[in-house]
Amino acid sequence: MAPIRIALAAVTLACWLMSLYKLRDLRRDPGNQALRYLCLTLVATTLSLTVQPWAPQFDRAVGVLNAGRVLSNCLTLVAAGAGQSFLLYTTHPAVRARPPARRRMLALLVCLSAIAVLFALTPPAYKVTDPYVRSGLYYYSTPTPAAAPYTVVFLAYLVWTLATLTRLGGHQAYARAAPRPLLRFGLRLISAGGVLGLGYVAAKLAAMAATARHTSYPALDRSIVALYAAAIAAVLIGATLPSWGTRVGLDRLWDDLAARRDCRRLRPLWRFTHDAVPDVALLPHPTRSSLRRVRMTVEILDAYAQLAPWMSPVPDRTDPDADAAALAVAVRRHAAGEPFELAAPPYRAAADIEDTNAAAQVDWLVRVAAAVRRR
Image 1 (cartoon, one colour):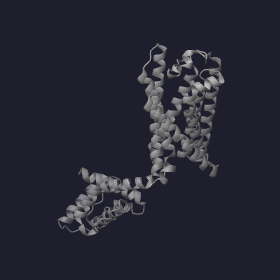
Image 2 (spheres, one colour):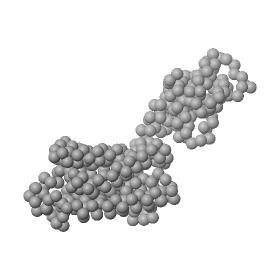
Image 3 (cartoon, helix red, strand yellow):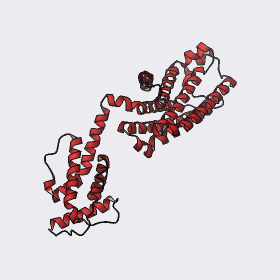
């Protein structure tokens, strides 16, 4: 358990640092609703993680068993509910995000009230002064639903929240709509954290079932703590990555890796067109990957322009396989020295994207390159 506890302490420290960092940002921009919910998520998570190691001392201080555990659970639910609202404001316009965010916060208040009532009505299994409790062994076991019925409400709300986080963070339409790569990657990390959180709930339910049968599995208890720490870390990194990632240069690193990948994927099409019309290339290519991608894109489009008179029109101008087939025919006819027909309308799929942005050009040419490679 020692490595897991060290990891949990590291996550707690990271939560404190990020909470203070984002609270400073909120002070500068108090009207940012998404930032408000993010700060609430971070602060509630930080306090929940901080309370957990001190739960025995907290119980003795207030004289009520499980008071620290319930407080930590409630703070976790606050973080989960605020996290849902943060993702809604991140992936939707504010006008559309506001009503569902309010409904989710209302559901959170209902669950917190239910937990408080159930905790107050359920008599504790032991006194705070009981030797079993004072030894600390009590806090290493998972209570049964009968001994802690509020846990059922806690886990039910948590499952609903984690499922929402997984769906919103991992939805391809939302992730692709994010304007920055770090934001897209952050949303996917939040989705991964939701999956790990669902694993935590499953392990928690298994431990509760084992306790009800008067058995225990130390490995299961360790997995609960590990999954909880991993889920918090994934959500924490995913939610804050767009802000601190740019400061440490992750956005530039990401752009460089993306440019290298695009160059590698464009190479089959560039080689194919370069072999047909080598005069379009100005070698050597730049060392910097982003400039090399621009150079390769321009040279491929220039080759299209030179080969266009030998291209025949095809029915589907959005099919990269059709583009690759038309290009192959044009290269073969050009290499054979066949005369082109001026009356025939050239196939100009590549020219159709010249008026769009560079990302759309690269995306289309990458798809054509894949089709060339398949041929």
